[in-house]
Image (cartoon, rainbow, N blue to C red; front, top):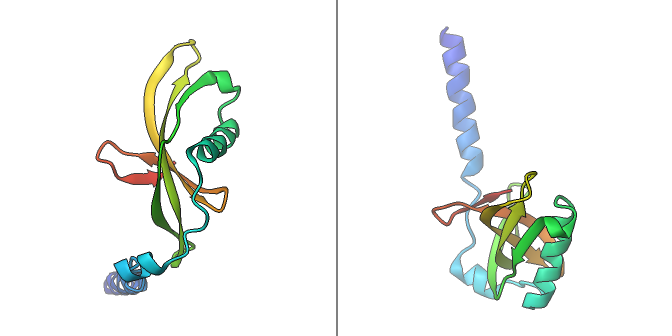
Length: 131
């Protein structure tokens, strides 16, 4: 029993120490970063429609409230690789199998150089989580 407890304690210790190196970028790093080309609202809408088209077909199955502005942001990929780009917030109202709309769902996409890098759901508290 002591061996199991000791192994669990060591695993927890090493697991937490591995996370210690993952720090958010400082304000100085963020201001000096290359965010890539900022998409226009029209370009972001086209990227969002293409992204939604991979899962929601046909396009008549949803109503999109397109983004009006892009927010500079950063995202962590592969544990400790930081990528800079833009967040585009939008809402989508999806038609269910009965033919009625389910109500707006708030979402965001992380865009870098004309590509959707990450799709995110916006929680009720405003926090972002992977879709």
